[in-house]
Length: 173
Length: 140
Image (cartoon, rainbow over the protein chains, first blue to last red):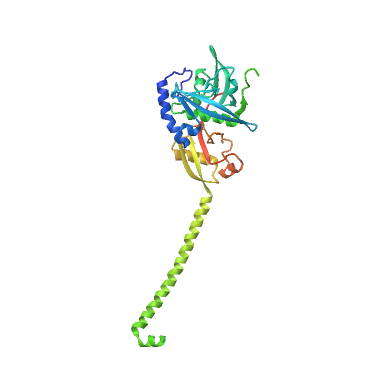
């Protein structure tokens, strides 16, 4: 289990190996043969790109979630909503690529303080950044090494289903 | 002529008697067969009737990356489906587990656990019989 107030440690080799292991398990669970069948992609050994959708007032908004596995599976994957063109997030110009999620289990911030600057925070105990900012967490919610990135995706999807409030406004508007 | 055969030929008379006895047995056997066929048809009807009340539910355990499928009565509550899911998956219940719909748009079913499958479908609480078990996360 992710230790309380401990800073995540990076181990890219272990992260890539764990991702290699977990992808087939998740594909089997989803009943598909490849990441492409799900619309997902793995641009490099430590990254998964997962399209997500939010529906509000009959309108569907598309987002791209980038999961990073450099501390996985001891720690959850990093989770950032990114600009689909650059597959990166730069504040404030990319903030409109972030959905407003206000679930008690998953809440998004476009610029959460992390000295010396800010980061995008998908505030959920199944994301790496949650532990990087040393967010308070009940022990029952802490990440367990038996969890997989599917836990992270499902938690965020669930917030989209019931607590999606549109996208953050574009910078300067 | 029949009378002549009966009276004048004993072997032939015996053969006729045997034939009559056999015909009686055949009649009886056909009657029994008809009863048996009716019973089979009734049993098939009963099975179909029972099957009409059953649906296949699919349950995935998100954290353990496991799935199962099993038959359940439409009259079973979501709570019963959730409970049965643990048994079929052979995974212990975590106190912070949540029962939810599966797929791309999971939503919590924790406020609807007393609804039957039939009611939940009719009320639009669920769209199908695919469910998920996931441990609650924290974050705000």
